[in-house]
Length: 304
Image (cartoon, rainbow, N blue to C red; front, side):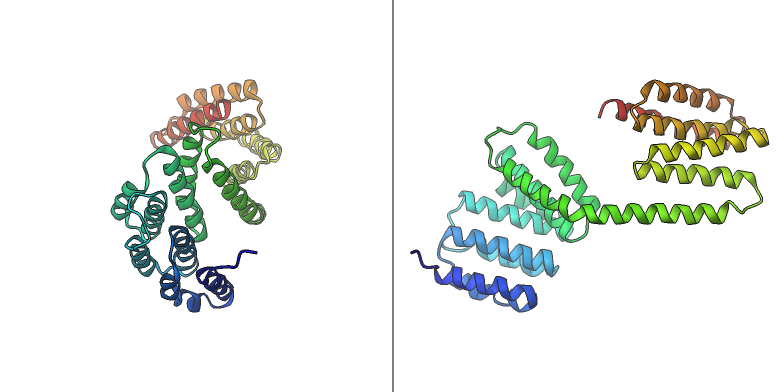
């Protein structure tokens, strides 16, 4: 039977304390530092301090200072695998602290190959999500995707990426469902209010906005019902090219999402024709910009 070391016992105690008193656990990092005797223990302490100090508490400056103490620990061998891991941890916390220059400097010591670059990217994505910085995490996850494509199939970082992203998916899926329900409910209330407006142009724009929400919620069939309502308004009021362009563009997007690219192509051609027929300069400029975005959308749908 292998007994835990004094460091391992204290780390377990601090991890339990962190569940109810994270500030108290953070205050014991110095005590943990004093018990650490090996590179492996420094690695564990680095992970714990970053997750607790930067992730849970947002105490970036203090966590950075602590990581720099770890980098000066007598048990750490300069340039070792563990040392590079600590430098990457420091780069992550500098990123969270919005210190890009310092993050790049730390990364220059911790990243020597694409595998380590991937470790840094997935670690950054995980911590950015922990801090609620979803947009920044998305950027890092896209970087991870590109890096994984060129890694050796036996590279251990692939398992790390798979485990981390599986956790992130489990974490974000309920939020995504709730956000979708909120978006749809908001769009319904918005439409119910504006469809009482006396100006049919307002109704037309409202149907268009509602249709876009359906597309965001991956409901192209419902979006096409909005297209039908828009077409009925256009026929009733002898609408011009600008209104008909938006109807065709919504139909094009919906059909592209459904994978009906032949129909989407026909709708895209209609959009191009309507843009040429828009007389008002301001509306024409707006439609031309929307057309460019639509063309890019259809191309991305064809070649994901």
